[in-house]
Image (cartoon, rainbow, N blue to C red):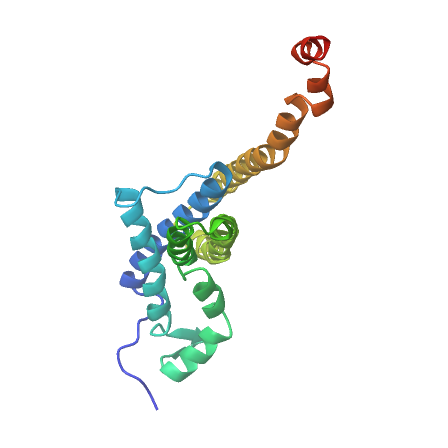
Length: 219
């Protein structure tokens, strides 16, 4: 039994789609650690905000296309959708799904709702919303799973001669430097800043022996 109108993996249209998908993945794996390290969010209603919705939509479209793209089993072309789905479920599906769900928008909406209820005097809701935003930043790292798919596509394009080995080396070096920089910034901000602030702030014992307190005790 054969199915109709599946996409050939070596077609020009699939290559164009994969190039755009690679651009979206590259943007995602750059912007996710950047937002975590520098705590910068896209302003609601801005061009970047809508662009990131488009990127998430493109990832969802990739899942649909994957269910409709045939594959080669040695020299035999397989275009039966049942076999395509089985192969996809045993391979990239779960990575694609986990990295496509817009956790940040879901948790932001939930945190916003809790924040509104906290304005009536529920201070615990403010704490819950803050904790949820921290979880949001960590969940964004799930999008980095797509780096494996990008690496596979780049290796395939390198074998086909679409990109050069020098380009791959420059891309790997640039990615490593970027992740090292964001990691250093994140750890310096989350670990060193509290230590420095506590070290520079006067202790209660020092305040008790300040000149003003001594003059008050003398008087």
